[in-house]
Length: 88
Image (cartoon, rainbow, N blue to C red; front, side, top):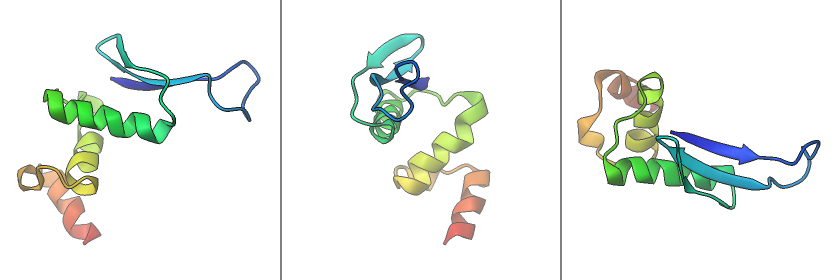
């Protein structure tokens, strides 16, 4: 799973040429308006398709889903529950 941003060479101050989402080596979304939109759509697809989070990022995605988006809060892992309590 990945969010990609393609910029023109040397165009760091210009809008990106393309922003999109890749899941399992397949480009599933492209020409998105912003990196933020791409992240939100990736999380939505993970939730709707019931994909497993990538192991190195499982807690990051779980925090986004269960703490920030407040989806399935009753099913938090112990590590995320501790963070959630500290944030309250």
